[in-house]
Image 1 (cartoon, helix red, strand yellow):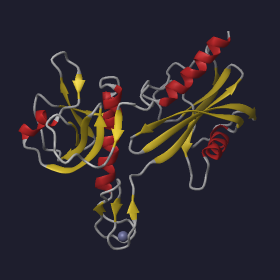
Image 2 (spheres, protein in one colour):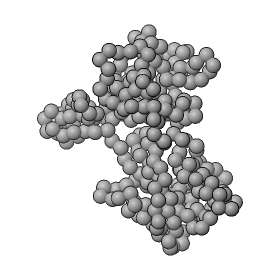
Image 3 (cartoon, helix red, strand yellow):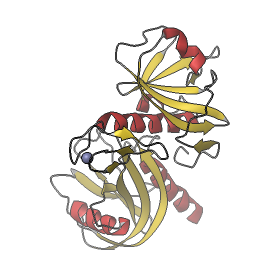
Length: 282
Ligand SMILES: [Zn+2]
């Protein structure tokens, strides 16, 4: 699964002193990532050697670390750069299932780091131009000393179970027929557990208990971290928050919604883990 730790990647922000033509280049143009096709029609992240011939104007570049020993960089170019039949530009969602899991994960990381860099050119506190830290990935303000780290917004997802049933809801902006687990952003000062209690109560009027961690997934659209949990129904009847939830129902493995969340998402894995458990209980 994409949200498991890729054991073959070592993160670092200190680039090797000697650049390598074989280094992977996660090249960003707007919100798209450059890929190349192998002779067997497999999409891959290009290496520097495949890109340098275009004479790119790099706006910003960050070292990411090594993937299976090969250095990786995230670089941003202007929207006009690289129009070639050899380079294929895709948004991150379109690359799910087409890149290997490690490359997909690093593509998301690259987008987040580039977005953080271009969004923190000036200090949010005093307006001074920031400078890039050397020892860690941070922007420093030379005037007021404020430190600007990459933004990560934690959000929880909760699959509420009641025996063999589970609660799914749909937001008005979901595709037709799709239901998913309850989700929401953590507020300042909240624990993840408090977020679950609040969000489930606010969105569907249900109280829960027995919260169990499931897994987490960086969600770089643009900078969330989705942290998923199982929990159990305690009390209440479904009352949907009309501003956020269009419909919410108890489903089961015999009664599933017509459309499930996409396989890219942790919501799908969370739901499938419940379905597998129900089958193993039979
Ligand atoms: Zn400042």
